[in-house]
Image 1 (tube, one colour):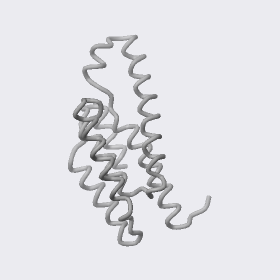
Image 2 (cartoon, one colour):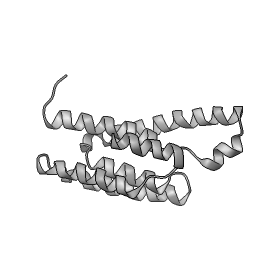
Image 3 (cartoon, one colour):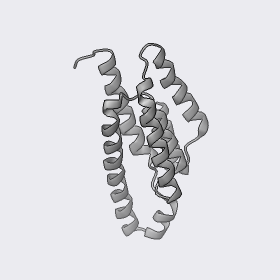
Image 4 (cartoon, one colour):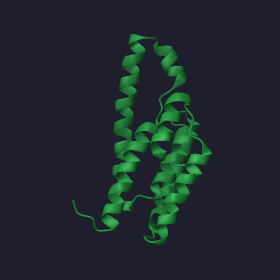
Length: 141
């Protein structure tokens, strides 16, 4: 529900609030008591550095980068590539939808407002966190 709230606010205001990121990080880090996930930290740092580089070129928002890093805390390192690829693919799909909408209405206004990238990050992040917990707790479907 928290990721849905983050996505809705990013869609409406193009902003990812710190309070939601803090709550999400506390929830994910709290699970480390039962399933330590310290081996994901180098990947989280790499995502942070890459995100800051993309932010400097105005390709990704800082809030989106922080959301991706926080979500990586709950993802098994084996699933980090899936998290990143799914985010990029869903982000491309969303960009195409926004481009088509801009062609119909006003492309410059759509470009100026930007793309709510927290939506694909939340969808792929939730999926990878869920898959990680299924693996950690040996849940078979």
